[in-house]
Length: 127
Image (cartoon, rainbow, N blue to C red; front, side):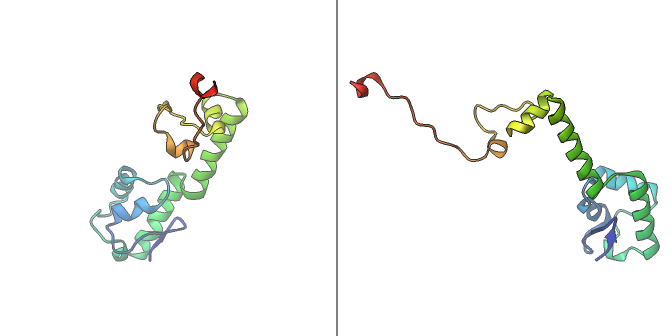
């Protein structure tokens, strides 16, 4: 199993797809990296030579923030937004959608499971 930038990539997939298993590398970035290094996209990850693997790893480490470093940066940005009290930070604190989605319906991913609230009693039931 080839290892690039501290992450195992699947050996039987094409290199362009296998690189997307690294956190912070999508398909477009993967294509750009392979084009810059003159590596064929259609090669399987297991067919890469050691020098190609080391070249890929070094290029990615040098030019992009990925994996743990990227996760840390994202967490620091969220903590900063919370601490300065901006709108997005408040939404993060409250566990609500941050990017303008509606919350009257949907938004279950951020809000969690439904919490049923008892309905109001009508005047007839009270009397």
